[in-house]
Image (cartoon, rainbow, N blue to C red):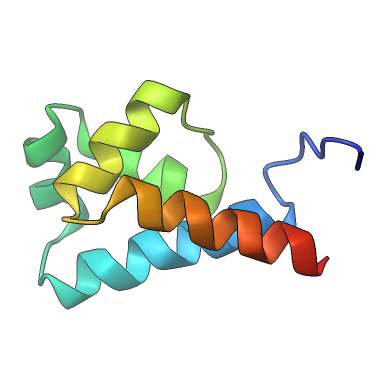
Length: 85
């Protein structure tokens, strides 16, 4: 079994942050608009996108839903990426 990389700068987490930014932009949402969807302050979104803040599993699910992403597909893609490393 591979070691768990706890770094917010791991390849998987960088990929996830890029996915979130790309999808937010694709939806035409500002950080502030996404924050409103999530019911959080807008600086939360900036911190997630820059890697200053990790998401827990429940935040991850809500974040995906707010961006109209299928949680299962995102997890599948993350697992695939992890297996390539």
